Length: 352
Image (cartoon, rainbow, N blue to C red; front, side):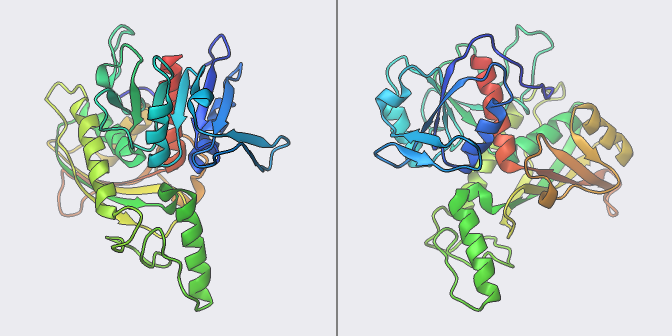
């Protein structure tokens, strides 16, 4: 389990580009990059517009988005792909030879031969700086695909526990927020909520189903992306992260997963069940997580309603399974967008 390290400064001002500069993910990236001193030069690139546009913000200065083309990417050392899968594929084609390293937060490029799945907060870090983390990214080249935040969160926790006790089995229920579908997902949930209260027709472009005041195990047939595809991607990313964990007893067992679309705007919530070969007290498990840098809340479990904008991963409600003395339930919550952006900026820190 990698220690969650603060993002430190670099000595010069590298040029960084963000494709999808007006997205929710881009906002998180800009906030995290603003904490670095000196601040990098940031170029915001539109995921769709063919001409430069001005992005109105609450800040003093308006943000200008330039079109996605080779000229916009030239000179950048790192390009964050935070728009749509289609814009990520266009950026791959537009990126000049020997150009910037692409840090893909959309997972659209994970099938490329040179792609490496990354989640620095969940990767096994060597005790010495000479050993490389997951993916053997020693050339800092190619495409760095940021793992799904739910997969990252589960891998973080299982990695911590698996280094102190042998895990026999585990399972996780992942409650997916609307913000994982971007601004379109947020807008549709908001519209549906208002429409339900006023008995109006529901907008269903994203989910093709009623999400407001509802839980979904599957989307409608005409949804933008099937929920089972999202579930498969989380399983794929989690399997890769767990396989790369360095546990003396062998690889960590893959948990059983179920993804449920929840009628919440922000924040992953995960109900995790873990069976161990030993039976430590729940307070000891809480101590393991806290010592590894997680925000552990023993008195009041974390909630997605108040986690927005917070870094890292929070855990609570760690209890023994009443029907199994060596099994434990725990509740995990993270700002999904912030967790993905944190890992992306940590990757950029390595590259720069």
